[in-house]
Every structure is written in C-alpha cells, then in structure tokens.
Amino acid sequence: MKQDLIILGASVRAAAFSALRANLRPWCIDLFGDADLCARCPTKTIAPQDYPAGFVDMIREAPAVPWIFTGALENRPRLIRRLAGLRPLWGNDPSVLARARSPRRVQKLLRAAGLPCPALSIDGAAGLPPGRWLAKPRRGAGGKGIRPWNGQPAQPRGGQRVYYQEYIEGEACAAIYASERTATHLLGVTRQLVGERWLHAATFHYCGSVGPLALTPSLRGHFERLGTILAQGCGLRGLFGIDCVMRDGIPWPVEINPRYTASVEVLEYALGFSALGWQRVAFERTATEPPPIPANHSSGCIGKAILFAKSALIFPAKGPWLETVQSPGSVHVVPAFADIPAAGQEMAAGRPILTFFARGNSPDACFDSLQQTAADLDRRLFGDIQA
Figure 1 (cartoon, helix red, strand yellow):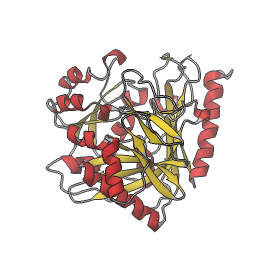
Figure 2 (tube, one colour; figure 1 turned 135 degrees about the vertical axis):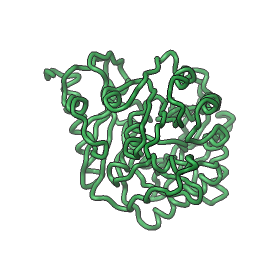
Figure 3 (tube, one colour; figure 1 turned 90 degrees about the horizontal axis):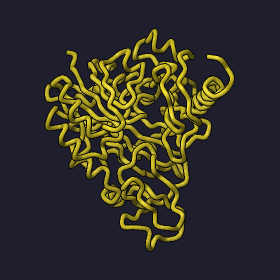
Figure 4 (cartoon, helix red, strand yellow; figure 1 turned 45 degrees about the vertical axis):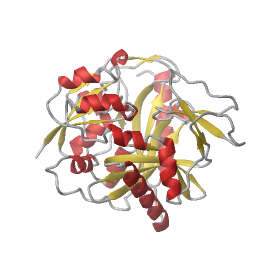
C-alpha cells in the first residue's frame, strides 16, 4: 500500500527519489525546488530568509501524514520538536539527536568499546597538546565551517560554538546503517569526496560519494560493531550514517549523521534497494517486515559528484542535463544529472550547481569518469562552448 510522506530539509531530491523507489509518495519542501524534483513530486520552495523556521508554517499546509528531515535539520532539535507536534515524525527525536550530535558522548561510547576515535576538546583551545587539530562548528553539516586550527582560539562564526577535534590523516569514507527494532544493519560503505578542487568545493566541504567499497570480513565486522555500539548508545533508529577516516585500514569515526544522508543513493543505485523502506519499518507501527538486506557485492560502483560554482553564473536553458528533466526515466535507474536548477537561475560563486553520476567497475574508474564530466561542465558553464 502506498503511503504519503513529507520530506523537508535544505535539499530533499535524493531522499524523495528514494521514497519513490520505496513505493512512497513524497511531498517535498526545500531551499532549491530543483527542476528534476518538481517534475516528479509535489514541491514547495522555502525562501532562504525563512529557512529553517518557516518549515513550521509550511508543514501545516502539507497533508496530515508522516514526515522525515534531511540535512542539516539534525542541528535544530527545538524545531524538530515543534514539527513533530504537527505531523508524526519518522526520524530520530530531539533527545536522540542530542546524544548523537554530542562529540563528548560519542567519544565516551567509542572509548568504552575499545574503538579508535579522535581526541577532542569541547571547552576551548587552551591546553591542546601539539599536533594537527580541526575547529568544528557544533551545528555543522556537510563540512561547512570546519577549518584547521592555527594555534589561536577559533572565533565563532554566525554565533556558532566550536569544538576541537584531532585531525586524522587518511581517506574519508561513510558507513550507512539502518537500525530497526531488533538489530542494526550495515548497508554499505562509500568513499567520500571532500574539498575536491576539480569540483570547486571549499576545503572540507562534502562534494560526492563513490561506492560501495569492497570490505574484507574483518573490516565489515569492524564497521558492523561500530554501528551497533553507536546506535545502541545514542538510541538511533532508521537510517543513519557515520563519517569516518580510514587510517592504516581502520575506520576512525568523526561524526554521526542521524538521518538519510547524501551517500545513501549511491548504495541504492549500486545494490538495488530502497533505503526509505527501512525508515518505514523503523517508525511505522503497521510495517512489520524489514526490506531485504543489500547484498555484500555489486556488479560495479556508482559515483556522484556535486559541482560548485567557481564564479557567479546564470544557469543556461540548454545543456546535457535537459533530457533528465524533459524525459525522466525510472527512479531505479541512475540518472546522468540530478539536482538541476531552473533555467535562468542566478547562482552565486560557491553555491552548488548540480549533481552528476557515473558508473564504473571500480571506485577509481568512477572517480575518473566524474572528473571528465566535471571538466566538460566547466567548459560549458564557464568556458566558451555555446549551450
């Protein structure tokens, strides 16, 4: 039976398409109202000056059905509580969010389990031991606001409090989980693209994913234990992700994302499952059977990348993304482009422009293909090629 579902957040297209794959009917509210989202789903756009408080009035106009949130609303527990009083929440409540987003609590859980974790300082930079440290906003998402510590107390930006986390050298990755009534399941692990210059992303900003990564039995067991420890210790339910850094073959967790994350759709396309089916099982009382657990292997890898504007532009009316909007294919088939702006939209430097995908036999092959597409888009959007 189909179920209506409200999805709201800064950008909801990926979660909305996941909902369609799970036989749900999404009703969407986000900042962008991208053309490919509007072509498939009822969509409302929230004005930047009203974000995120304006969600309260907008959800009152939505159907009286459950709702989920995407990034970065996990940092707004008071707003989550207000919205949950208006519509049933299929997601982690404010008490769970407070635990999952507490660096001190997460560190305590990991140390008690004997799992590696970065050192941190919550109370300031005074007394930090020598080494490389990051100043991180307490309410950050997608890497925004993270910066290397330069030896001086980090000044809050926009009223944000910061904490200091040990910098771990290695490859960024993300593990994706689904926690239901009886168990926590590892759905897969992706390589994270972070601060890539060829995508014009700012340092530490998330800008894509490639996966699934092949895991040895030992590494899979480590990731499974990591997810179970944090799900039980924080009370996490439904979909969530753990951002990690792989150092010497061991994942070092650096952050929990207690919601549908940007990496999920890469695994969905590669492994052929509908992630929001797990969310329904975790929160819908009448849903009793969990979806099949994705296979541990796939026929290849999927990559996604987000191109950022290296200078201001007006998004052109024509381009290789146009077919995706005019003739959308099955949501079960990976598109060439996604998160496509409306023609004529003004885009400031540093803003995300659109997402694009690649398929390959390995993560490296996907990475190479994504780089080629990024170069082609650069020539089209910022060069002298006529659209």
